[in-house]
Amino acid sequence: MNHDHDLREHFAHQRRSDHEHAPAWTPRHLEVTAKRAAWRLPFWLPITAAASVLLSIVWLRDAAPADDLTAMPELFTTQGEPLFASLSPATPSDSFLPIHLTIQLP
Amino acid sequence: MERETADQLEALHPDAFGWALHCCGGDHSRAEEVLQNAYLKAAAGRALFSGASSFKTWWFGVIRFTAHEEFRRLRYRESLLGKLFNQLAGDQHDPRPSPARQVELDEQTVQLRTALAQLPARQAEVMHLVFYQDLSISEAAAIMKIGLGSARQHYERGKARLRSLLQTNSAHEP
Image (cartoon, rainbow over the protein chains, first blue to last red):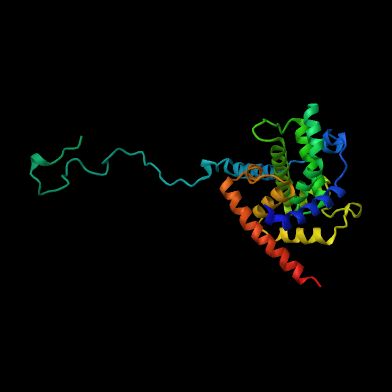
């Protein structure tokens, strides 16, 4: 380590200078002062609050009630007539069919 | 806090301040704040010495971690959101050291600080811990939380680079 003497000399000089300007040791260093104990806003709080507000807005928008169904236009209407009522039971649907193959409507 | 721990902290106080000063890039007011916060951690039992390493190694590790926390807090304060919230919370902070705390540094100290500032952070740290604090490379590695091999590499490279920077700076002097 002898060849590092030049560097050690530099650092020793800096060490002496720092020690001269170091704050004096007091037992107060180990006491929780009023300033330190004072309430301080944690850094994550604003981020969490902003995220919560954003999520609430999105959730409230999604949870909005759907439009009333009665207000929608009626697309399908039922006639209330019996099935195949327009067809006459006497006439077959295909006149070329043999009689035993013709479906007889009730 | 136990009396023995308090005595050890007192004995290490000047060197601990030197280490805090290094961790804060030579800013006296920030170094004082970092050291005070580290003392509070020890006093409140938030940093406990387990005996796994030497007391000095443990304590310097605490100071280093606290300085990193302080750096992150400072960076947050400087951000736009942080500035806004500080205004709302009324927490004003002047990053400039007060004139009373500004220290007149001699030329040699300034030269070394300038050279160290030009080194990569890890190299500067290992240089300070080995040459200033007179610790071994393995102790420096424990404080910096890196492997011994990596610390050795930083040590060798840092030494060569620092020597060259100091020579260059002294050659440029009138």
